[in-house]
Image 1 (cartoon, helix red, strand yellow):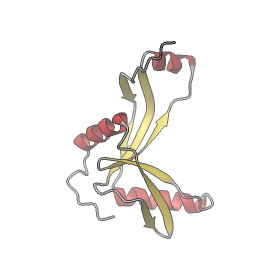
Image 2 (tube, helix red, strand yellow):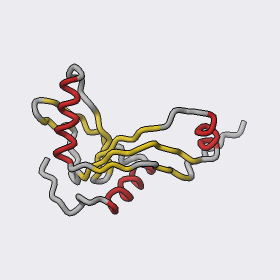
Image 3 (cartoon, helix red, strand yellow):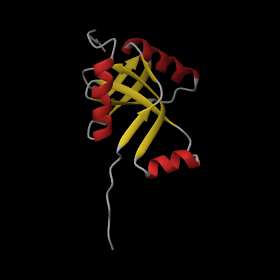
Image 4 (cartoon, rainbow, N blue to C red):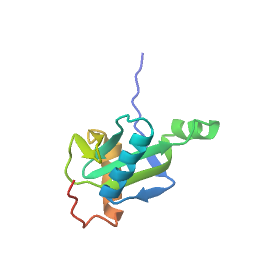
Length: 125
């Protein structure tokens, strides 16, 4: 039996939305409270917090995946240099998950940081 590991070749993101970190955490905290108080989790890698959104697995998307090309409909992100396991904002808890071990997420964080309009701002939270 042969086992083949074929890493992804390309990630295509169709929309990038950048937030100020504090504003985004307040928005997430508010959404969490209005949705019944579940604890949301946000990805963190190398100074960037982010959420990604996939396209549904249509025939076209699956064909692209087989070729090694991932398509994400959008990525929302904010600069957050220091990793913290949890953020408490407006009496709501937000978990940060350190996904820096994943090569795609590390490279994504680097790319997002390069084009960030908030990269020079100090993030207090």
